[in-house]
Image (tube, rainbow, N blue to C red; front, side, top):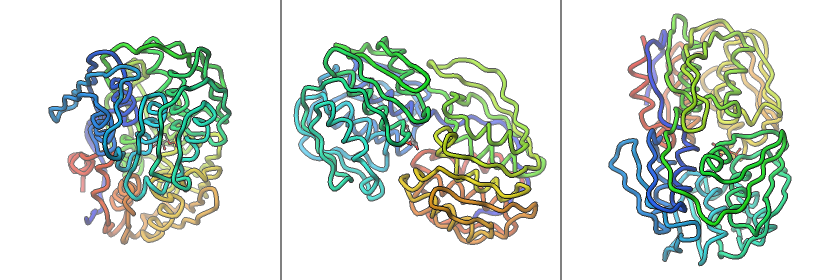
Length: 427
Ligand code: S3P
């Protein structure tokens, strides 16, 4: 796909529902009692993978192709083992959180995924679950992951890496574990959608600055949940509006959970003009409207403590850094190597090919900014949706445009991305 240069992003838009909340809601609805209704569902390949998984395990899902999904729950211990493997597609959140639910069921389950998901590290979830008594094996640390349902005991586990997916898998297994609390201690706070949703469902949840505990339950009630807009899908639009002179962009109903808004803080440090207003609560999560205008930027440093709050937005920080006065540094972000692609390599390779002065580091990257637009060139998304969106944005802010290979992978999280961009772009 050829992405031509743009002069501005102008207009108002809403983004699809938060991917991780949509996935969590489907998984929890499947083990609730009775029918749950999820509105504002963020329809995308990764959230449809959550539906595929619960259907494979016996939950009935009514999906009429809109953003309203109904799930007929089978009860806390009612998931059934299908005859064959359960396909999680590209979705790490689905595979890892499903592990947390399946270890407490009856029967043998096998979880598989596409090539990227297969190769990602899954021992990080298997190891703590085994400490709870789970029978779970990875394939040399990768998928397929095999699970035999068993009795579980509570655990107190200190995460070696800050990962909301690992935390969530342990907390979900904690619903099945003995009679006492299961506790996860985090090196840095990560997104807390799981614990918010569990608390909404009446599960006893205790939170401290560094830990979260859940108590086991006998059953979960069905629920109605409205999902707010995905900040990670808003992020490429925000980036475009900040970088393209004369932009004026209004994004309505964006989730501004403080565990997710690191990009907004980084942009503020860089001098961007973003108004966050009309704050409200939707589905137990903080939500706001955002108004973004273009502005000159200064370089900044993002380090490990901040990384979990914008981990999926770090590729865009590299592009922002290309326009900022000074050298922008991202460090303590080795987790980027364990994402859908090795994002330290794919970001560096892609932006270099477009003329950005960026160097990879073992744990991040460094970008030298200039006020001039980079030339543009050819960027390969390597099947990674975040790199495809980065490549698209790089094209808009370049002089000659970008030939984007693998643009279709945006469908993993944001199938309507290019249509929405077309509505907002001024040439
Ligand atoms: C997610 C957590 C993050 C993030 C991923 C979604 C989640 O992964 O990168 O896109 O929904 O919990 P880690 O928790 O592994 O860092």
